[in-house]
Image (cartoon, rainbow, N blue to C red; front, side, top):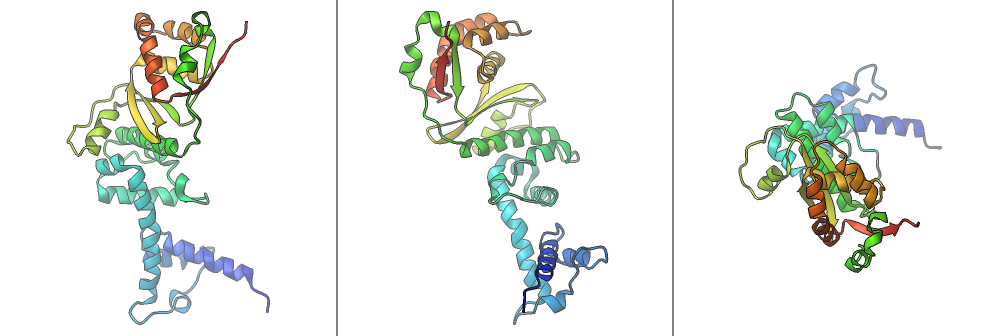
Length: 284
């Protein structure tokens, strides 16, 4: 006899509704039994009991595993967010998030890609919500940097060999695993304190600039001052060094003398940190 694909699809839909219900399998069974549910099956007639477990207990095993796997993954990706919220509230938040944004990718690398947006826009009742969202932004970017493609770093000789008169004409190519973040809270020291198991009070709101990058197969995060952040942002957008310097010095609040005095040291540091993977020199 031919297989009834429509019935199989309906059964799969019912099973998914039951095990993915954020309040557990029992609530999922009750929700799926409503007349407006796209799939309705009688639990006792669909799932057989075992020697030790009832049908509800058997299907609850899968329901518990469904969320616990997501919670396990996201606690590894967002350890500081979990620390801030506490394990119980973090679990509730993850359950709500994956219910609103179920995974649609073939693996779970992108499960939490919308989590910072969710915390910022849809979780307004959370304690310290703006700070939590800022932390999540950094921790998500650190995951992205870990997975980004590898590009061979530029050699120091390539930088040092540029003729002095050509310096302002260079355009730098950036490591794909490098991100520049402008945040409303200084998060870096707090994240380090959590990592080192030290107490630190939640800081007051204050503009902060962070670079996240991968170097020697390890992901790092580092605070930047306004001038270095602005210069890197201009260079990353494709401006030549001359264009970037000119545009930066015209910005309100920029210390032009600081940029001039620090430029050589910055480039040595950024090259060592594998910020750059290539360069071009504008032709005359």
